[in-house]
Image (cartoon, rainbow, N blue to C red; front, side):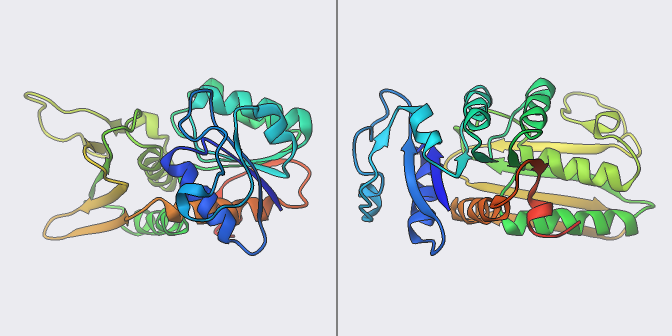
Length: 265
């Protein structure tokens, strides 16, 4: 499968390039980044010690058109532009970008009516297993448990709570037959009063080079159940993205997530 990677000079882009170059089935055909990127015009695998003959380019259209599948972990506005190019050229897309508003999510769903798309808040196989565990835990721990979601990321992350934390909240709320918007609490300050029964609280840390920590706490009387995932590097996201790209091979259109890719429905 011919893979194009956008944001090639960034930290996630470099992990995606490394994973693709070491993959036995995928072939890197395009490494794309914006004008002024430090690696523009250089071999995409040079900094990894894996020279591959693919030069980093700013020609987004040509880079995407050469591929079977684009992998995109950039920012919402850029991802939506890239998705339109994918649609024009019939190229599949794996979207790991987070922070989309409702209009952006609708645009992704619309594009998926013409091309195959995997769109997920977290591409890690481990995190997606955690989503399944949260569904089970929530259905069992139905009475007397307060639910809190904690997440921590590096200081350069621009959205909060993380897409993964929000998806955790959605999984929990859906297991309870509710909508997250009706029960989420995103901030506490001052004299807040007692905790609102049935609410789902979020706590956020931003600092240093934390790749990504997520914990859901079910706090009961006399016990606490915690389900935690900690990422030590970005490689799990890259490996999951390639698994998603392989899942899309041969599909004509449709919107999927990692639960589909991993057959966890």
